Image (cartoon, rainbow over all chains, first blue to last red; front, side, top):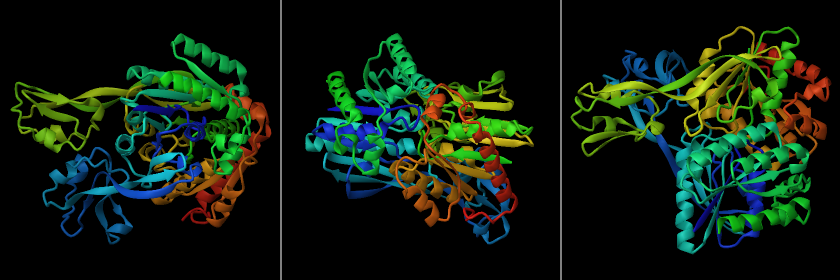
Length: 296
Length: 290
């Protein structure tokens, strides 16, 4: 079973449009959307949600006003500045201690230090994940609750579910749409994976972001290839990206030309491949043949 | 006045708006600080080209166990919600990348066998570029936790002028850390299904944390009209619409400001700022302030 993860460093370089197109070109595959705080892949996959499961991200502390004696010990120990002491609508209008749920890191230190056992510490549902059917194969995706943490943990759940599903149904390829950046959810998306395809574009920003991402994939020792999207926006920079790739001994598996059909496909809620046969669609087909060779 | 620029979806133009707004304001004689809080992939320096004057490391405290004092009781491991410390055989294993630096293990150890040592996870740079006070947080490659770097950066900058905060994409903890406590949030989007879906999530986020906000639509003539319809339906103000311009896209790709292509943007960004000031000063009159 092969797992291919598409990431970019910089956001908006075309990861999701590309993943949708690769899905349309491949068979026996499970799709995963690991961009859990801004998941878009399902929008072009004609998905039907078959199963919804709550995601427990971690614990959160909350002060029980009945038991709290206003001693303030909890605030002294909290390193996340989550314990406030000011008028708040949720505490009967008085000046009482309360916990800002967005600042609370769920460490439990305040719970142990409270002399009155006045702090509740329970698991919180911080999102949900879905198993969908699509015309191309099953899709595992999620929605992290608004302003919630622990996206890395949710990403790990999605990848694990995809592997189970692929095993059960005898599917031999998992394609993962990754998040932007190089932090927690990206690390959770790529650790231990088979191949990383980096989608970049010819801009100084994207080049800078790609270099950091390539340091990360090298750090984890993951085989990596590169694809240059909208390559004709700045041909010189596209050549610079190729040069960088050569320096690092990494393959550039494809160049995709700028094509308005990519946005139109999205507006039509279709993948670029499904939407018609323009320049971008042709470039993606060539890219896919090379990716298949790279991962086989 | 602190204005943060966020988006939900990546690549919609946060850094373009943030850097150009900062320079437009500095050009009117204002004292302006730009904070690059996209610490995983900071790009502001590419556009503002600052001379860096100072750099500091950002460290988080991680435990170090004195095995001569340790009795292997396991209290530290039981107390750690992040599974960053575990008693294994005759030793205590620490997983620094999982540690959030809460101090729980250090507090609970009955033998006083744990001390905390700093572990560097990123770096802050300060300088001046294009008349703007420039600050950047940069997470070290391989580190997972970006919020401590953003927090350190936010703490460092306490100035009286205008602070422009360039947030990371998404709607989870790194974004919250960047935008919380700001006076106004500009949500930059593009009028496509992905842009709209992520805008709706970003609107949910700013409503949840209770900050006033409005929208800038970039590449406003691509895609479809559903983003504008959504904003009208939800009574969200659209501060500015920027049409797609291949020359602007090319200037961006080279790391240049949009003023270099179209000087009118300097005036329109200043007007955008005046609009925001007006809303913030007349608390509650903004449509989006709900």
